[in-house]
Image 1 (spheres, one colour):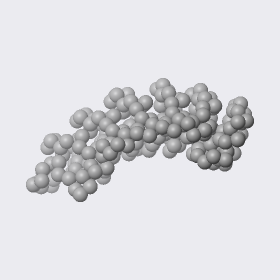
Image 2 (cartoon, rainbow, N blue to C red; image 1 turned 90 degrees about the horizontal axis):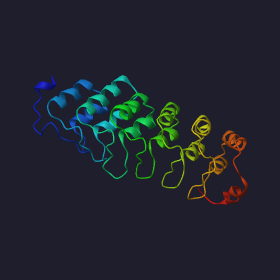
Image 3 (spheres, helix red, strand yellow; image 1 turned 180 degrees about the vertical axis):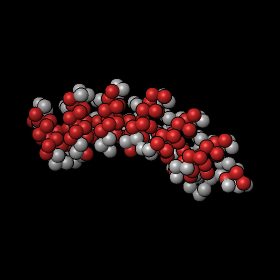
Length: 227
C-alpha cells in the first residue's frame, strides 16, 4: 500500500529528469495515487527539467480520467495559464488544443480563466495548436469564444496560412466562411494563403482560395523564394 511507503526523500522527490512522484502518477493517469500525493502535501506547481508541470502532462489526455486529473490539479492550485519553464511559453491550454482534448479545453477556458490569446515564445496561441494538429472541433470552439482569427505568429503568419501549409481544407473553409479570415494577409517572409497552397501542392485548397477571390498576381513572382 502507498500509505505504508516511507518517502525518505520527501513527497516532492524528483527523478533524474526532475519529475516528481506526483508528475509520474499524472503521466500514467493514476488518479487515486495523484489524490493521495496531494493529500500528503505534494506541490502541483513544480516543473521538471523540460519546464513542464503536472498539469501540462494531463492536459492533452482526451479521456474522462484526463479531465478528472486536470480538475483535481486545478482544484488544488494548478494554473491553467502556467507556461513551461524553458522559455517555450507552452501552456496546458496549448497542449489540450493540440491534442483535441475539447473537454479539457472548455474547462480551462470557462472555469479556470485560460487565456485563448496567450501565445508561446514563437507567437503560437491556442488556435494555432488546434489548426496545425487538425483539431476541427477545438477550432470551432475557439472561434465561438471570440479568438482573433487573423492574429499572427512571429513570422507574421495567420492561422489560415498555417491551415493551408498543413493541408487542412475543412479548417481553411471554416476560418474563411465562419471566422471571416483574411485570405490576403502577407507574412513577413512574403507567404500568403495562396502561396502556401502552391508551395505545398495543396490543389483543393488553392482552388478554394481562388474561388473566394484570392489574388495571385504579385504573389506568384515570389515563388522562387523559400519559405
